[in-house]
Image (cartoon, rainbow, N blue to C red):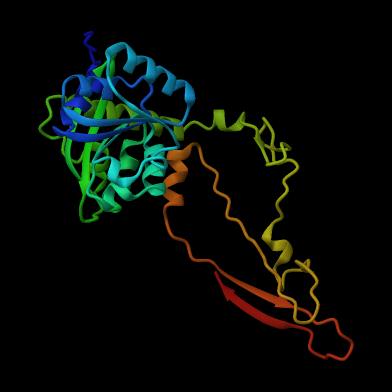
Length: 305
């Protein structure tokens, strides 16, 4: 029988899989990890799941080549896997935001006490915050170099929510004793410096073009506002000039008003921290009665949203 060799980042994940686990590998791609674990007798069953048919075809060929039995699932995240089918879930080779989306959509790994092995490609600090605040505890965290890139792996189980400080979000929850911890801190510092340097450079922002949902240009390459479909709120403010009515209503009619708060920043790392904050808006509405029998010109109504 041919034996599969794992690259370092996958071997680190394999080392953290409990003996006798029922594995679900989400975003399995070629299926190398579950096939290797089956060959080594480390797991009792393996579900290899992916959102695309082509990666599953690769996984099928890997399983056939190395004589391993994989349960292949075409599904989005954990949607096609029942809680009783797996006690260990691996998510590797995807961004931290994607992992958050999957766990938000399917929270059963937390509810069943499942072991999570996460290897985010991006936004690891965002993932650390989310998992810590949403009922998971980091049991182990390790680093590995693979093809010139430093990867981090987090081992999570259910636990009491808490909010880590910024130093642990960026520096790691349990990395202090890792031999590669110094390399990791250097890499994080370089990344943060690049981000700060980018915040101080507006030249690229001035050349950006913004379009609305219809494809019409809203901001041109010179940074000028053109064809903006929105209206300034001052247009509708009572007591400022002659306000424009939002709508006309018949007696007893109920109107629905949708209002939007737009955020524009240099990148998602700039916008996301603002989006995560709670914001209370208080909007007051006032109406004018148009019936000839009424002497009342206004009826103030206030709603808190």
